[in-house]
Amino acid sequence: MAYIVQQVIRTKKPFLRIRGAALSHLTQKETPTMAFRYGNRKQTHLFPQSIEDYVSANDPVRAYDAFVEALDFEELKIDLDPHKVGNAEYDPRAMLKLLIYGYSYGHRGSRKLERATYHNTSFVWLMGGLNPDHNTISRFRKEHGVALKNALVQCARMCIKLDLIEGNTLFVDGSKIRANASINQTWTAERCEKYLQKLGARIDAILAECKLVDEQEQGNPSLVKLKDELKNGETLKAKIEAVQKEIKARKADSLNATDPDCVKVKGRQGTHAGYNGQIVVDEKHGLIVHSDVVNENNDVKQFANQIEQAQQTLDRKCAHACGDAGYANTDELKKIDDQNITVIVPSIKQAHDKPLSPFDKARFQYDRHGDCYTCPQGRSLPFSYFRKDKQRRAYRIEDKSLCLACPHFGVCTKAKDGREINRLVNEETKLKLEAQYKKPESQAIYKLRKQKVELPFGHIKRNLGAGAFLLKGLAGVKAEMALFASCFNIVRMINILGVPKLMAELTG
Image (tube, rainbow, N blue to C red; front, side, top):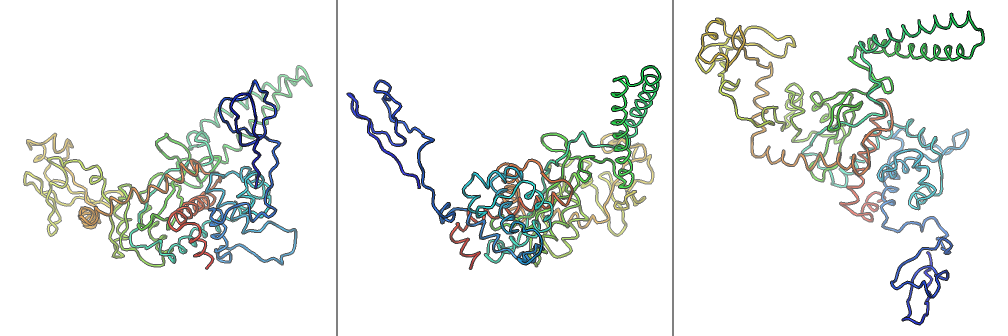
């Protein structure tokens, strides 16, 4: 510990006691009239002789250390064999501790993590004085993506054992996170074709100019410059052609040349290249049970997939599954509803909560036996045909003249063929889920959704500074998302139990 030097400067005025460094450089005339604390870079400090004494017994870093030590590295697929031949490498446990603790305090870049091992006493303690360089840190993170994802699974199961996760009610939500790529590098087949045409014309022009210059002045510097431009143009052409082939192979609408796995996503900050991060949160303490990243720009097809993966972590079924209207896909919701799980997801209409128009679909009466609708004017709309997607049945009035002569034509419909009603193949399930959402007990659960599932994204994006992923590719961003989720869970565990109790539970 550092010793504090006290010096009393006596003057003709009442004496002034100053704590801190000696102020020998101040003259009597310069003696301050108020007490300030002044630093002195030449002050001698006595650090503890043992790194163990660098942090207090209740420092949060000790909880992170205990958490990693409690992980099953064999299940993480990380080899801890101390008898391996070859050049010695850094202890994988220390490297994992560095990543998890660093991400929890906003140190995400490999160079920042490397710097912290030299200058931050908690990092020095955590690493036991080890100082891996940024290349080693970056390589470890890339090579152990599966281990980072499995660490979250083990973290959630630890929380279950500690009775911090019940698994009765699960909330699912998604958020757009930027990729480590520019939106300007997103190419479509049409853009590739136009660019290749312009590039081809420019290459032809350069070739013609090279030929002319070559004939006139051999060895002219302008010829060297033209050949360099030609070489760059041909390289770019090959790159665009490769992107064009990849778009066709994937049958995709577009492809990003920097990160082919990312997609165009729309957020509050505009359109950018990114991913759709998904989390499933438990009701009791808001802890994350499962995290995922998908390269889709909406949540429509994610509800069943995310809930089922969360249940695999819980090793049992939940009682309630809740999400916002972005997950309102009847086919997806039915997969969970069929498991006798109460699904609480509003339809788009319920989310907007607008009053029904006089000729809304809900105003038409459906006759299950006759398989037809009856309009408010008493006209019958029998089944007509299946829509292209085969998921909706179209019902239309047989005599369109009745519609055209109706006094409400133009309000009910403006179609020349008369009013048409579309009914989902799973319409009964849709109506059941809408009625289920309206129940008082469902409304009570839905009110908890924002505070439970949106809080983790706020912590991840604001406190951890995760406005964008650092890694590229779907496998990399999945691992990084799992790392964020683990960091959030550890912070919540510390806040709920406290450092001493959490360490006792993890090491017991």
